[in-house]
Image (cartoon, rainbow, N blue to C red; front, side, top):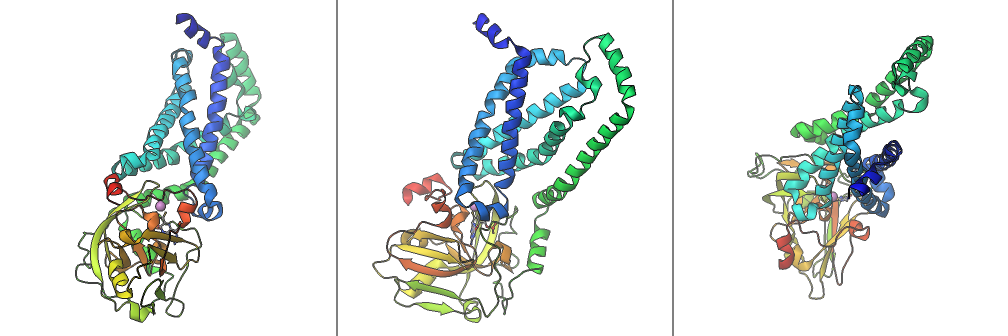
Length: 418
Ligand SMILES: Nc1nc2c(c(=O)[nH]1)N[C@H]1C(S)=C(S)[C@@H](COP(=O)(O)O)O[C@H]1N2
Ligand SMILES: [Mo]
């Protein structure tokens, strides 16, 4: 055993280099894929590729455990070696904290299904926060450590003699040194400018939520009149106002509607096909419900007060024919669809929602009308819903075609009931 340990420790310097290099490549890949995954633009471009990228991100993230463990094994010696270099020790601590934090929160996100939203929500916040703090740090670290930016005296501080020669060297290269420090500051400023705004946006969305939503509604792209009048339970919202922040997800540019280009229809295997224009649609009897909203990528918005037409009512009025087995939902974006079995669609709380917390649903969040299926992950909650079709046989929805689970129940005990 001891021999084996000794062997592992041999060639220590080389090993540290090896670990460092592999670690750097993996972190670079994780940063790159991690930034792309939640980015709306890439959602649209990647489609199916996004689900692959996510799996790869998880796999590489798990493999990252190897260099971390290997390093920890060599850490004692390295730590002693850095005795006189507090900045490097600090760097080791920061990087290890980042990696371990990312790893642990990442594992929770990976296992969101087993752990549920109560775990995945904080894990996502931590994963994001580490990214906002850690990525600029790591980029700065790696760019300023490239050879051409290194100051000579950083490379050798072994013996007093060397230190002396280095000192003179450093003073000789004074103009070069200031050029280097200039470049470093420039990199720092560049990072602040490129990452700062998104960081502030992220911070804002995690702190105050209501204000954001308000500004969404003000500049809303939808121009549908008359505005629906909220029911008394809806304003003030019985749920007390939603808690958390929606991330705007879309696989197309956000569509906008007005009275002349919007309509809502129910058709397929029904006895009475109908189409409503907006004026007719806002007259339909609505109800109010309070429910939580859980995205599979780990975030949730709690206590939403939704007001809308129960899907069940619409189905009853349309008269579903015996041959129908599936309810297919179409988005006005022309791209996104999803479905529920007839049985699932008849659950009490499935809502064709028109208002959120007493206000019309903003276009970013799927207004004027979106589906709400509280018991399922929200890729089922089709935004810009404008058509419901009753069909025979199954329909595989947009994200399910691209790798999401057909089974979207949030809570596992529901699966057995379904
Ligand atoms: N038309 C349409 N509906 C959609 C999506 C979409 O991309 N397009 N994304 C789904 C997913 S994965 C989620 S988590 C929720 C996000 O809703 P939000 O953008 O209002 O936060 O909408 C769902 N409905
Ligand atoms: Mo989602």
